[in-house]
Amino acid sequence: MGEDKSLLYSNVERLSRELEASGCARVIIMCGSKDRSALFNGECHIDTKDTLAESLFELISALQGEIQLAPCDAYLADEDLFSKIRGVPLDDRGNRQPLLARIESQDELMQSRKISEMFQNIPSCQGGIKARNINTPEEFKEIQSFLR
Image 1 (tube, one colour):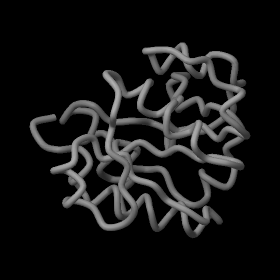
Image 2: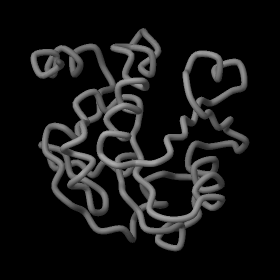
Image 3: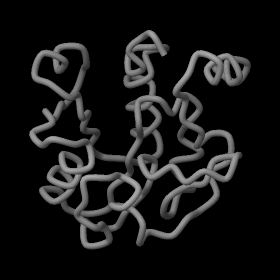
């Protein structure tokens, strides 16, 4: 995208507020490296494994209870979406968005180096346009009219 997606539109902070409004009691930000932790308010977790999937599995394994994920590039995700997710949401294009999944426990996950494999046993649910992730400037332009 040419910019740090996590900082664009202050989306990590916005997502934290939306998660809290939907009832999430604890928000943990996976920030990548130690130097990036200074970029975010709140509780940060440093990635300690080679891949995002491995780091995410490690973090989830240390947590108890229901877990709602939210990737930094889910610019339209909001309290309403988070309150309805039960599994891995499908966006408006029919793509599974595993980094927006709600899971009951790590037992539902497969240990893998790939996100898609890690979440393959979790059923899909509807998410619509709010579940879309954004990876290019063109995709960001498509959703700008929806941004508050």
